[in-house]
Image 1 (cartoon, helix red, strand yellow):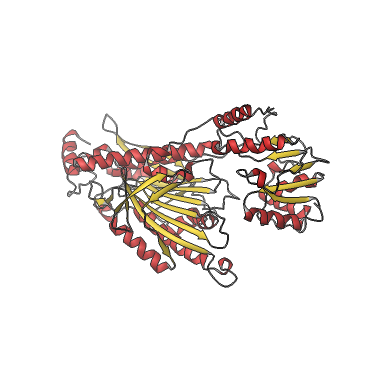
Image 2 (cartoon, rainbow, N blue to C red):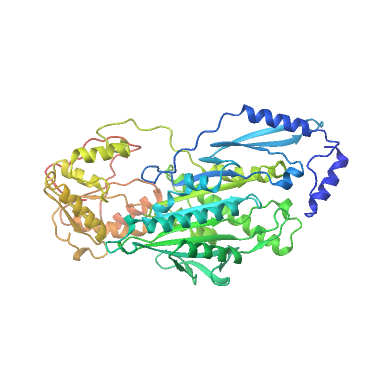
Length: 577
């Protein structure tokens, strides 16, 4: 581009009412760019076919899924001569940056970005929902937490994407709660569905179901995040669901910016809560669909008012906090050292606390859908989005443990099911029960007592014990309340060996855990704690708590990876697990 053309183009862009041509006649680079882009597109490998829908967490352990969606070129962009500078070859997205060297010679720099799913202009909302979001509905109905984020520059299509996904989630949830398998014996609904909708604007929160009434996001004394004052509506039909979504959209704050006449200036959160009326002890499921405010560069905000500039600053700050929370959370599973997730830094991430805390006992899955524009004029924005999103994806370890028929830790899900079927022809692998606890009984222990505080879990334990009565005749289940230990059914029971589960990652329960161990130790039991050290600081707290109680802890050799340390030594013992 010649020097005299630069000032004219800058002046035209600074006026949002003017739509300048992308190429000037004196540039004479358009032919080169079009031919080179066509050549590079043809040289790219074919896109991989989308696999089946994302599997449940029981079969696919990834709890953070990252995807990219590239929208089509708009008609006005084509009219201006903008080129399609994005190539999509699932799971890879290639960005082609059109540049001019210092000597006036045009060039294209191409960079590839790989994510879990890459969707192109030809993929509609149904395709995206099927492969990334559909598996979240059953997770929520089981009491889990699902979160979907739509991220991207203003005008990249994120609101369009999330609006479509919200409607599909609405259809799916209403359909599933009304399915015959989810109806009670008398035909009543097993689930109730509640909907709330609010937006976060900087440090302020507003209710989109209640005429933008101010709300407060805070933690209660139990560490549970509450949205104080939020109006929640019970939903019973798809028509009601869709009407409520339209109502909330009408109250959302938008403003005209340089890039978009209706730019989202806030984070909108659609929260769906499901309540199981049959299994009342099951926690409510939560589904968060988050339409993030449009990200902007400084160059896009130079004509903003002081209020718009403040909004932009708050938006970018919260987006960076969100990125840090997701990135850190995705690394926790593969890290042994302590990592801090700064979810209290912003109201948005505080609201989603359960999705970021590894200590949560609930199943959680997060889906990030980054939206980008293919236009060559938006390449800087698209590159920023790609650089923001792709680091959130953490690849699973490439080294897999050697299969070992004697080590259940190396078994696949199918192998575990096959072992259950071959070990006991009566047990149903679908029955909720920690079946590994029965392994002690199979290994020859005289008496195995399984404990839990939840009535629902105890019922399922008893069911599996009954089904295994022929093979494991000396197995029982008893209630164990950590808070009221002396009054529990397990009180004064003699046990040679007490086995503790993997619970040391939550510092709040350490005092109770140590108290339980001391209770059994003074009665002559031997105690073993099997735990994965995810957090060295928390594990150090456990050591300190045992020292205070006068309990001597001998740390056995660490079991790294999935090493096999032989069969459990429990023959002839009375064991509590």
